[in-house]
Image 1 (cartoon, one colour):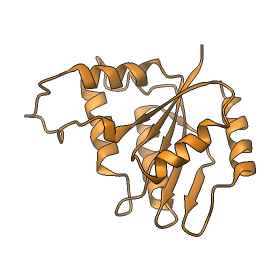
Image 2 (cartoon, one colour):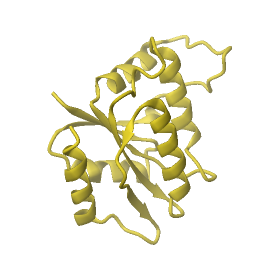
Image 3 (cartoon, one colour):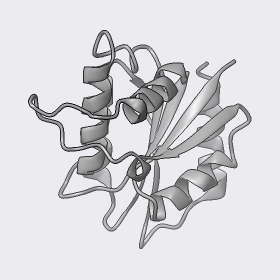
Image 4 (cartoon, helix red, strand yellow):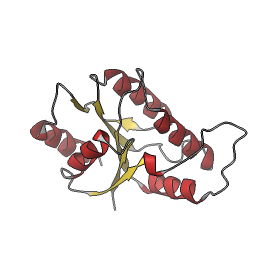
Length: 162
């Protein structure tokens, strides 16, 4: 069965966005919040004492048919927690692209600014990991509210990819 993993990078505005997007799907979905995973900052010297958290996260990512990532723009790019989680996933799977290759992805953002730098830099990172990224994004910020009709069309077309 096809399943979309909706990843909210933060537990604030992007979680609200993730929940609103979730309501528009007609396929099975699951929402996770990266802030619930308290991974140490990855370096080659750091080892996880308790592997349960990373095994849980890797399992969810590997089992997913596709993703929706809801994240803010931080300093013109991705939030550090997102990059750190992806790094832990990539070093915890047998082949570093296992969790992402040949899956579909949609990027959404609720950011203080327009979020365009996050959208472009994160798209590039996902494509490098092997994700086929949908060309449209869902953008919310202080000047642009969540547009249900536009988002519904994006989700409908995104679901048609699998």
